Image (cartoon, rainbow, N blue to C red; front, side):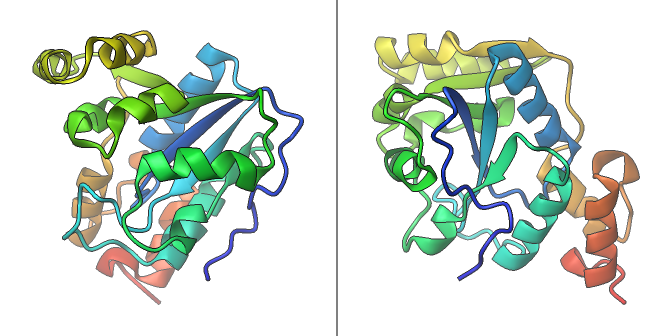
Length: 222
């Protein structure tokens, strides 16, 4: 089992907690930007980062190892006392459904029953949201927080309005937070690394050094 040095054990003192899931392959400055905006705008006490083992919407995608993704996430969050990591999805068999995580994580983290949960989403997470496992219940278990990127695709929003229930879409839309555009996506960063480029502006310095020294994504191992 892959374990985190920043594993959340008991967060019973927190009243408003954000849950931020994703492959984090690799974690980059765009992820940190979304987390910072969500925390500041919603007044969250802290953020639980939940790296996915097997994203159900990307069944054929080859990811960096769990150990490497966890190590990079720990490096990116070093020094942030209001950020914790849960390896719950690494430990669970089957696809990493957000519905299951939202049901299991509060008890795992020791959150109190009246703790308000916020599901942090980047704009890119909205594409295909209507196909998420039990999406209506996901949006009821935690208040979604969507960091709206300037220039976001309005067609995606229109599609969700047409495919989600009116209640689910209203809940989703109520959590929109406008913010300046964030840096590149993980896909773009990974493609640059695989080409032998070093996207210094897109990655925390410690994460970039880890990728370089460990040869993750085929880049420059020593």
